[in-house]
Image (tube, rainbow, N blue to C red):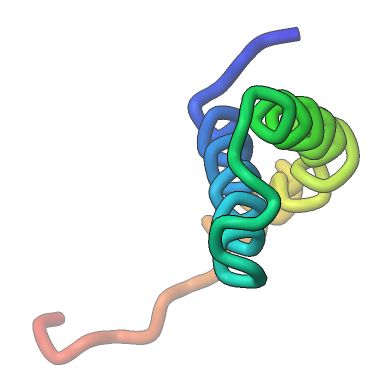
Length: 80
């Protein structure tokens, strides 16, 4: 498994969403302690793994599509 920068971004984003949702829902309750941070960390790690193996591959462009786009003629511009 190769860790990429997008994996870190997904982890931090997920952690931040859960942290801010907890803070906005009831400020100060439950108290932020080690247990909450560990729970958020494991949940963020699980979502990051799920994203990497199930969701991200759906957004990778096919090689065939890139070749077709390169072959399509572009309309002339004012500079030409």
